[in-house]
Amino acid sequence: MVGKELLFIKNNEIELEAEYFHSNGSINLPVVLICHPHPQYGGNMYNNVVSGVFNYIIKHEISCLRFNFRGVGKSTGHHSGGSGELDDVKACIDFLVNMKNHERIMICGYSYGAAIGCSAINYSEKIIGYVSISFPWDIMGIQYKELSQSSKPKLFIQGNQDNVAVYERFQENFDSYLDPKTSKIIDGADHFYIGYESQISEEVLAFYNSLI
Image 1 (cartoon, rainbow, N blue to C red):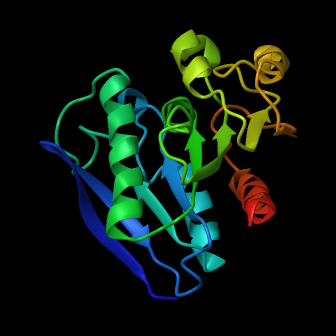
Image 2 (cartoon, helix red, strand yellow):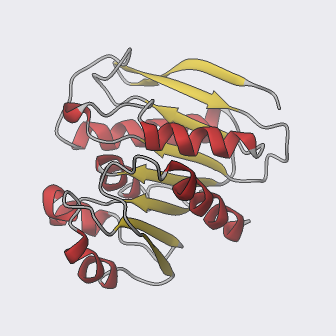
């Protein structure tokens, strides 16, 4: 284990607060990029789901980056409603490729972070797939469903008690995506996944392992 590094990632005039773990394993193994939930509802890179996945991933010696969107924590700038945040994700991808020399990236986004993060799937050929945790399709609109369409592997995780990313609409939205895709329904979980962080993390790791 090489250790964790607190740093700032440049996105033009914006600086994004981030935490990066670099494994001493093969550089050819994918790195995981985690995107946090909605900033205007308290979302940040220390959210319970984000932290659960980040800590579980790095415990397994896998390189990982989590970051705060613009205007969150120590990140500069202001919330933009989505377009600027998508640029933030792309800046993190560029950082991982150009500054940390990663050849393959798996995106993992939760809620708002799923809509924004997964919408960068086609930004680079180095992105090999994504995990979406409670994609809020009905809140974010058709734009992010279209941007997150891809023929790359996808895993959609959803709680069956979720009334924010409404569970009753999950299958319809899931069915609209291109293959390859898989889904995992977390029985008993609502949108916040309190007490289900380990289960989610195990699913994320299993999907990661399916890509390598």
